[in-house]
Image (cartoon, rainbow, N blue to C red; front, side, top):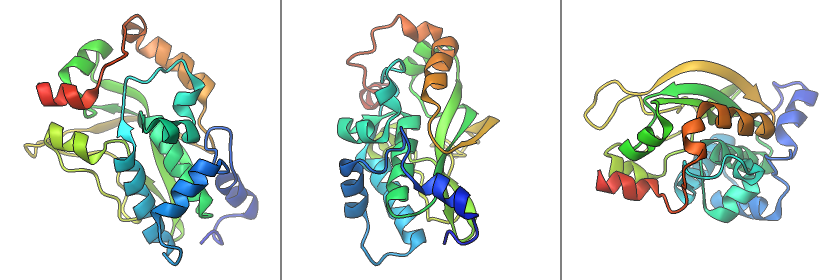
Length: 226
């Protein structure tokens, strides 16, 4: 499966990194437990996607000042994370199986949210939204395992599925079937999470949230209440 990538590029996207720490024992155990040993690459990336999507709850209220919010093993230990941390964990789980994986970033408008989160952010534009790219069947496939199934149920949308082949980025329609999410700017793909940059960028982009006490905030509870 990696034959169509030059060897040095293949190693860049299959070896452990600082934040996509696929050599962490807990990440290795998680990735091995999520798929049958005899599964093919497409089946593996699909199963790993679902394991990260639903096994790790989406939490947009994690501290963007902490590097651990971006690290795969820390997100796995916490059991929750925001888009970048979940993308890092998915990439790490794929690398455990020798599947090339990297993280990508884009600005997204009309991202799934709640009224309270939108008020805290002061905008409907989510900058540097994180997703994962996996190399399967000779091409890079894009998928975002951000929104877990229980959160989607409360927001009235179906969970975003990934079959290991067709891109699965963000929900194109809301619960009423209306055109919804839009990718505004593509920031490219990276072999590891640029965490120091993101910590500074989030502080600039969402200055309104820096002074808020976000502890105890829960998006699923907010979604159920609205």
